[in-house]
Image (cartoon, rainbow, N blue to C red):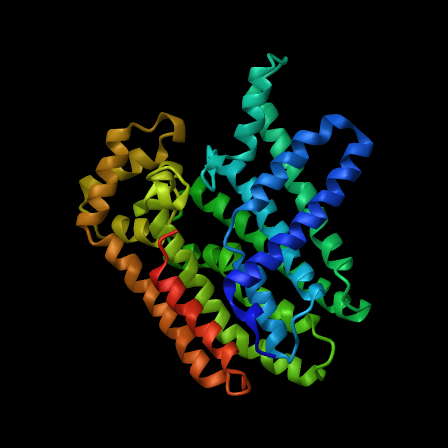
Length: 365
């Protein structure tokens, strides 16, 4: 069962190749409909070029935990999660009015720019948003298509689709909860963690691991359920820690490394654990000023106000608080690893899961 495919870089290569094959096939199908759809295929291809492939990697390791071996079908099936993730990113950028993604113009900004350059009629930004929504929907539709044509047995695909259905419901529910929290200026830490759990944590680690387990057809049902349960104990806290670290990078990260503009999450007004910590501990005058900054529309926020909020959060210890909370969830994942993974007899399995803990703690992008 061990082999060089256990290395994350090899998994990324295999996943990238599966996506390239699928996008080439879909590009041809779109071209048959109309040559005017080429920009859509180009945007999708470029978006799928980047990324960490973590969801696909966790799916692969869920498969491995059940005794699965390296074969093209599992890499193709796992690649379907990259389409789901890309769909969420495209829609998220529209909702957050983000101008960049992975160091490149976001999809809606890309199409707004092309609209303006061509001097088309109507509002360029509205066109860009509409195009991005449709492309995000297309990626979502392609998710289970790629899983169905992966080459896995029909019963494996059917089990996998059930997990994929749960993932899509959870991530879309999390997106709405996030949207509602920002609109209502909700300052509840419990609600913030609920958003993190459903929008990101479950579909980043826990569900991909469980998808890999479900896709494996050779393991008894009871064993699959036991492994899935163990992976929940590990995957959910690790997924939360991953998102908390992502939130830290969204505020304090290096744009050259993260591919996002500096302070992008503060301009968006994202209700992170760090921001909520600041709003609970700051002096009343600072809280009032912070609320004024957060309530100002994104594109109208003054750089000086955003810089003040960043400095105030740092001085209040909110950055350190975010790190502490993220590390606490990493510790929970480590405890689950020690208790629940005795069935993982292959050293590569255990090594990968522990390396992912270290990656989350140390990640810079």
